[in-house]
Image (cartoon, rainbow, N blue to C red):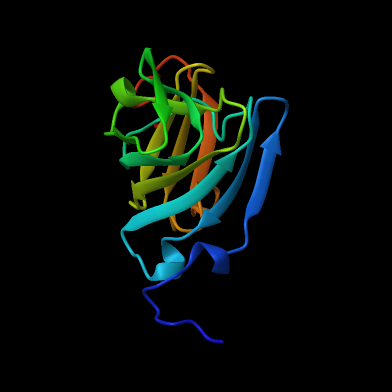
Length: 167
């Protein structure tokens, strides 16, 4: 049976991609936005096992994000605060470091949520815990930031003069 409509995708029609790193990060992800024809809104379904989080604590300067908790419970860090979240909660993260965010599954069952974001091609991300900065330019946000034409991640360092090495 073919797809019902180019703007409709069912979660059961999408294969999950599993990702993990070390002892702290793990998730299953299903990218829904592009498969439903979205151009400027990204949406992914996530499942995070107990004791894990999907991504490091970070903030965006080019894209806004939101989470809708479908099932399970967790702790959501927003800036310097930690908030308990559970099924039915909707959490928004405007641009900027005041809204840096991460979601940790502190429950005993998988934490399932939708991550929804704008899909701007240019973004700057900061990682306050690890003091990293990432830049992405020319990104297809439906393919992920690492697929950007320009993607760099580096440790924060002192500023240099605008004209350094220009003469």
